[in-house]
Length: 156
Image 1 (cartoon, rainbow, N blue to C red):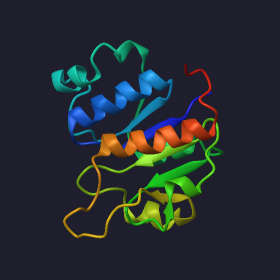
Image 2: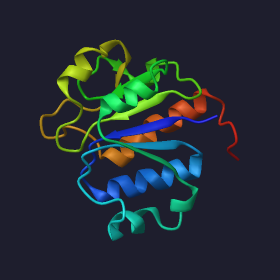
Image 3: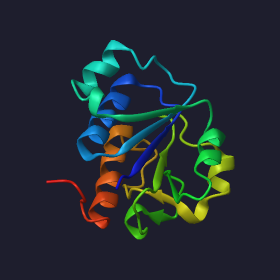
Image 4: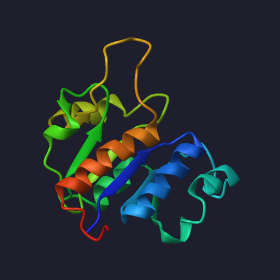
């Protein structure tokens, strides 16, 4: 039983470190799509994840299509501020993938246009200056909803 978190071209080491820590603490898998804006050996990344790195099930891909080809039959959800549906509108299942875009640009339009039916957003106030939430916070919000829906299996 695991939820898969995908970070598309993450740029900020502390965000990825915090997400890695959450994945390790929840038994979720972390998938990173290159190019990365840092080295996964980066000291800031390691510090954010503290001593959880040995608990992390980490996978790294050259591009998003490599991930899609490996997991052809998997259920994918795409987090974006451009979605029409809230993250709570979806039915998450064991082994599903939740894909998050890079901090400065989100997910590519091509991916979103081909997956609008499984694109999700976190509700926020309508304000041009409040464009999005922090990536690590967004992952936590949506991941814990997916874990709640799947029964918090193996969590105490």
